[in-house]
Image (tube, rainbow, N blue to C red; front, side, top):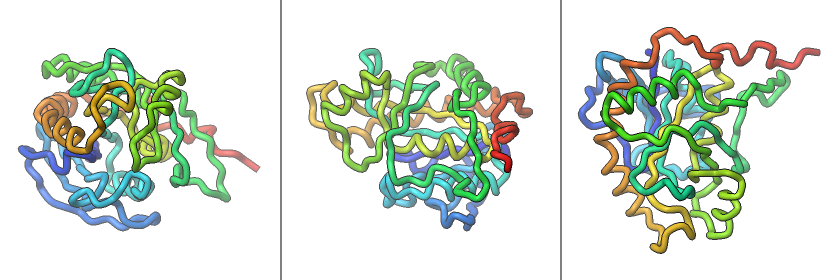
Length: 262
């Protein structure tokens, strides 16, 4: 199994794709958010996971991120596409847009963000948090599927579950953030620690606080995500065909010279 897909708000199953089976996995770090659904997309067997569990019962700050990513590894997954709902900060990003981030800022706290709590100490290179090879394939998939993508941007990850204040969004904008979400980290760095390729697809479901005039609601988030399902499916179908079977990126070799010696 080569590809894993993890999704959250508004996308709890990829309707229209054939589910071959479901697998329950217990990891050294506890239980993942849900069962992994083994799905076939364009002849490619993939593993799909609901980030927030069945019926969206796990808030972003309580997700067992380590178990989720470890479970993909146990299934034999080498690449993960993470789909998430985000708020738009940049002027050129509007609700309904799909962004393929190339950078990330982590301001979360209290989350288990490494598999290496000691005695082994590891410092991974995170200069490019998203796999360059996967990003290139997804950009090509968007062109082939006719799905418009904003092919770069910085995702800033907050703790949640509350939404942000106007002043916070102003500060994030000054930091260079283009979109704001609650789940991008530690998914990205945990995937890197396990040598997995990782790419994010961020659906802008609303303007971030103070950017738009309307009050922020979860209804808007869910409706926009559901309205984006058809485009996401088309994009994933093409991406499955265009992502190279053999990895030639640096993700798989991240642990070389990353471990501290005595």
